[in-house]
Image 1 (cartoon, rainbow, N blue to C red):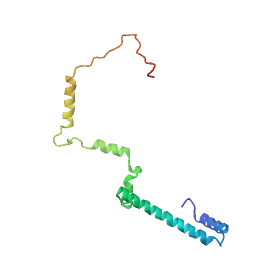
Image 2: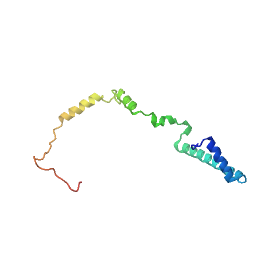
Image 3: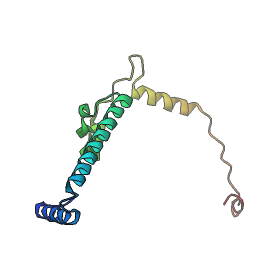
Length: 131
């Protein structure tokens, strides 16, 4: 509770009693009770608003599932690498080996690109507006 232990709380309570005085103590305790009731009402109103807008109850959410400390990148990568992904995505889809073979065959059929090279010793073109 805000880093205040028992003896510190009692000391603050005694100082508060001396400052407020016995005549105004009932008035301030009533104000404190009203503040606590108002905070509880606001919290339950926020809970109901979230439930109406999101459609789920906050108590039903598994908060441990969203804890970022549970995600170990090494475990996730290990599981992804060990997965058996040789099955086709859909029943009629080609396998990964067939897809790679088809890509290699089409690459062999394409004509080679012509690469233009500068003559030896000529500096590369420079555009002063591009930098």
